[in-house]
Image (cartoon, rainbow, N blue to C red; front, side, top):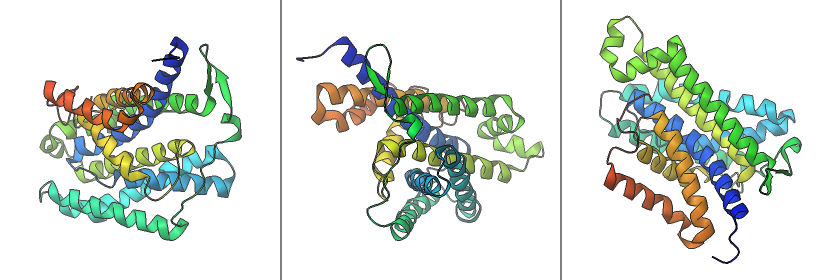
Amino acid sequence: MTGLTFELLCMQLLTGIALGSIYALLALGLCLIFGMLNVVNFAHGAFFMVGAFMGVYFLGVTGNFWFSLILTPIATGALGLLTERFLVRPLYGRGIDYPLLLTFGLSYVLIEAMRVTFGIEGLPSITPDELKGTLDVGFGFFPKYRLFLIAATAVIIFAVWFFIQKTRYGLIIKAGAADQEIVKVLGVDIAKVWLMVFGLGCAIAGLSGILASPTRSVNPEMGIPILAESFVVTVVGGMGSPVGAVVAGLLVGVVYSLTSLFFPDLSELSIFVLMAVVLLIRPQGLFGKAGAMG
């Protein structure tokens, strides 16, 4: 390829990691819900979209990006709590198809709600002043916001890991994912655990939405394509594996970015080819066991 240099390749890899950070976050929330509740949340992309809208809205109200970064996951997490308590919970035990169809329908309800509230065109995304511009990373100048996106994703992933691995509630979640009956016998109210996990997954989806908003158009349909991509990430990493979601998210982002450099017309197809190859070699995904809490 004419003009290909080491610096350009490094920049493209860093771009892929930034893109993969969004995939990793979104897939992390998706697989937490599936791993614990065995619910395929088809409204996850819609929660991502709502998070982007809420982020821009809160930014307009408060004038502070950091406040909106705190308020957005709280709002989407609360919406997730209401969804689990009043919509998803009555469908437990009826088979995986029922919550799947319900969340599929819910996604269109949320899309229409955003259309009615904010209009078909959506809202203009805004990058905070302190994160505008570029920074010298040694092999070129890279957008500050994308570097922040990578760093913020690392912090969030560590926080989720710490919560699951090092706290009492996290241990209950792990135990519940492994054997819900044992958790019930030990006197834990499993319904509250389900509620917390669903709310946490939706909060992560909303947080990924606001983090992604400065890099893409904020419109009611923005969650549809990224939902398909996040399912690809989840399948590649292994259904229900948070570690798999993170690794596969970064891998998919890098593959997409490098394909865009060498074969731009095949960039959209590349991630599905990656999924097909992984499933042919390892049908359970890279990190194997469905329902594992990593």
